[in-house]
Image (cartoon, rainbow, N blue to C red):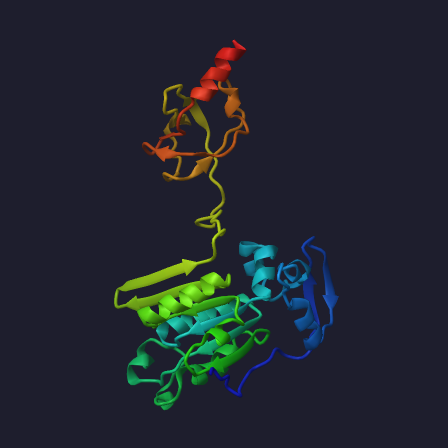
Length: 295
């Protein structure tokens, strides 16, 4: 059976904070811990995420990058991070700074001399002590609003069932398989990450219906085009040989096109890059047929 360290660290007492709702209206609230927990508790439909208020003063930079909806989902998430060597502690640091509801650090091993070269929260005096336990206090200081706890026992299904996100590092292949199957069956987001010298491994399972809508976080690219061919594979040429910056597999849509006006506000079309100034938007036969019917 899994056990938590008695050194569980709770969120701090009520504090006057600047918050913003999804409409961008700022106000000041004073909120006790128990009422915060009630607000942040997520039901089976995740509706509590829509009622969350985000501390704009604390998370201003993240809000600009991630947006309110993503931050609200994070704020109701309980995260398990298993393995507190170099990679695990880096993940834990970023997750705690990100502002999730709670983080549980899990590690069954003790600090070794080799850990001191990569785990930046460990010191020589920690050798022989459990990695998760000695890391708890130092990681919790990064964000006092994230509840922290520790487990030092072997993982069990009962223990894993309380989390929305499970992250495994330095785990065996057999453990990855059974934990992955358990999480997938119950809709728990599952991540495997590990490093081997210069090589790294990552595996993500976010469920059957997870769709990536933004692969790089960059603003959508906009280009001026000079022509669209009427070949079987319509070729788009950029104006004045301007590089388009697209990759094969990207999706594009059009506006203000003259001639082949059916492209304007069309459904996003997947492209195949032909060169730095040209790309194909696939078969335009239907568009050519529409033009013939109009004529």
